[in-house]
Length: 615
Image (cartoon, rainbow, N blue to C red):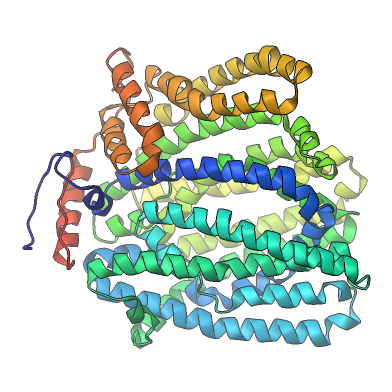
């Protein structure tokens, strides 16, 4: 088929072509695509945590030991990964448009580097564990160390998934995430933990607690192989559109130029991260050596992190910034940032309201599912939520700096962050000895939010630099914060009324499960579509731009249409009634012009041609 430019109506363009069309509808469509899978994942998580967690992990220390060992070697792993640090979103996004052959060579380099350094890492840790550790206080952790070292070989098991994510193939990555994390990992983890548990019971020299820790470590590694096979099949279909095969990725003909480019970039972008990893390692040592029962605290914090994790949900830009900026489409890159902020604010507000509502019943949830050992994790939840509120916006700033090649500034900021963080923890733990003499609630807030002002300060400086020297940012402040958060507090108020006058009486007169099920349905099915997002529309958080994006997004959202389609219809109706609609819009004409130019360039480098739709 000859290369032709077409401005097609959305009725004429296929779903596959919409996924290949450049635009913010892909990140948003990916978000909706994975929503049903996330809900299913949440349900499986409740089953796993409720009915199986008490059997698999009766002792928090089992997870604490594993977490401590991961922390010990994380610095070493990070150092060995310097040669590929942050290269995916920087190089794959750019070369995907103008030189797909070079994109494949970047993938070749990644696989080659990770497999060789993976051998080195596994060998070094095995020697350390077998010959040095027996003489230390970590004798109990020898087999956890050896098993954990295996995660570094072959070391490239997520390459195909990460490349698909950078290419913004979010429909594929959503399915892969569900298969890998909620099917393969759950099943394999359960199997290995049970084997470890009963082996430990049968062998007192190992013990049940340590047997569980070893089994969990092996289980977390074994599932990656099955996930890689599935992701390779998905990626092979994408490569076909470029005229390449999966076998091309396993060659080593990338040349010295690619090696030097990637390795130099990796060192510049990775060394500051390595320094931050070293600071995290020292901080962990400070806590371990000075705070009694730290392994228990970190296990409890980890459980709370699982429950509070939805506040981290955001629109994943993948390689969109590099794809646009490095191909001289700066207006388009700035447009991506504005939309990412806008939709992140919308998602944030909803997630915050739901998490706060569920925090009211967290203790009852633990008791219902016989997780009495984890009751003390509940106080960690609210501090974790507050700590993570800035994460999506911080990730966007880092994505911009990496995607635009501003590695020197990013390096300086990360070094400063590491230095200030180290000084902070030295003062808090070693000089003033605050956690040693503090009550449990103080330890909770220190572990969760101790460095929050350092992180926020770095994020603000990042955005100041970006606006002054990289992209002229136009942040839709009202649509990101005012409209969504006013809606959030309205939802919270109504949710508390439900909790106080409906949930509690049902719980007391019937039982927790009967009260819990309708609350889940209301919070996750009814609140977003019929309450929260309509409120944001009434308050002016939507305009013609966002509605056009949403219309495209629902068409590619797969099973997510159950949510995205009625949401689009309801918001379309409300938009005609509210006087605040279109009051806070941002001009996108230049960005759309650049989008069309970039899509035309993309078609010139493809074996398959795609209809262009910027409507």
